[in-house]
Length: 113
Length: 114
Image 1 (cartoon, each protein chain N blue to C red):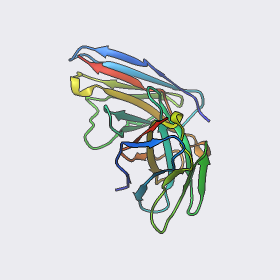
Image 2 (tube, rainbow over the protein chains, first blue to last red):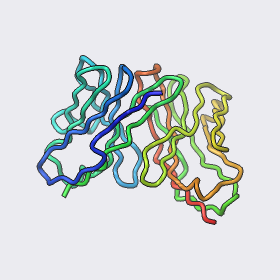
Image 3 (cartoon, rainbow over the protein chains, first blue to last red):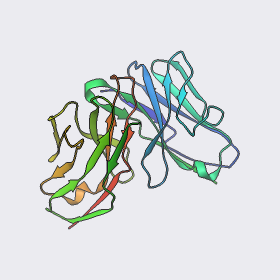
């Protein structure tokens, strides 16, 4: 199955700033998925990133707040822009690895102060 | 749209007790069904999965059977251990392989006491 390297693993950021999260996959994949897990909550899909086209965002998430890049088939970034304390969450990337199921990055624990 | 409903937690059990965590789903077509586990401070791990009706997924003593007639995928374990304490997520994928994200239930926190 795919191995995903996600970084940073955690960060503490000042409100109003931005943080870029990176995910590197050890194999080529068509789609990458970005999720948010708010404290004590389940995972909510932010967007789907397809190489060569703009990401598709779920209701409640907008490109200006969560811009995504997908420059090639093994890499993607998610930026959390103009952060507020409400953005404090764990952010995860994921890929579908067919019969092996979905693989997740280890997550980025973001705290906004 | 597609959705997953799982029993509310937290669930607290004594070691060696029987575990059931209920999960039902709503989806068009024939989704694949998954259970993921998140141990304290760790990332998500695939526990088991089933891709068609009547399939049984199993791993580490956990089992779940894909029941199309009741749209359910309940997680069971005959004898839980303290090390099973974690949050368990039921999830589904309703589209083509590789192109469709998972839809998660709210998660059920399990605490096993010695």
